Image (cartoon, rainbow, N blue to C red):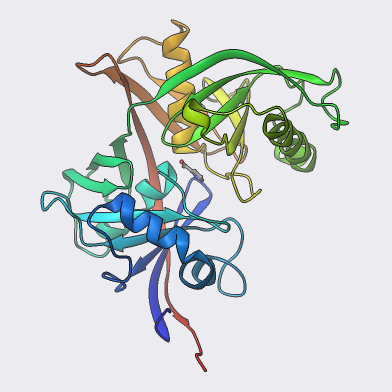
Length: 310
Ligand code: PYC
């Protein structure tokens, strides 16, 4: 059960909110961050949902539950969650958490390490205290050009789409032949197309590696101000207002696999709201693509959430 008062710091990364939960260290138990994520998944209805959902939040907030790290070389352990459950990793919230620690005076500019359920992430806080770069987990294109029938969609004219399945900390299906304009004014149409694609993936048993559910759909298109623009449908059926850190990592992995982006080259990703992340990648000793992303976040609220218990 949550205590009657829970302290949170809210931030915004490229339009996407993060609610960092502080002072609840020790509530999520387990020897690793993956175990603590599992704990939050099991107790989501009583621990996670009341923090991010209405009436104290809304369906677009991503929670970042701060724990003592298992690895003492990390400044914190973090479990990410959204309106419907736990996430494996979250890029915009990583930027939000680092900028929030800086706002609290707990991090100075430089390189730091943060522990997540999918591994240790190296982050760099830049001198302005708001801009953050981080190396994401190894990302990969799993399958290229997977064709899916989407019969129920009125917006996808030919009833089929083709996309890559890729991992960037979460599983994505990235589509560029959707035929839609990626404009904020068309967000209802984009939402309905992405939901239809997601339903169709599930219906046809199309998954990530080892049967992992593809819970993010990324519609990709051209941008006037960056190298590409995206619209990302997240697991709780909200769309990402930021360029989506894990989605940008998945995109970088696809570009690398297609020979369209070389290690060290910069790729700029614009979100549906016009915000941008900068990305590049290196190849590690095992040959894996390690994306590096840069974005910035602003702390916007210091809150005490109140809970009444019988
Ligand atoms: O930035 O990785 C991200 C993300 C995932 C869901 C919402 N944002």
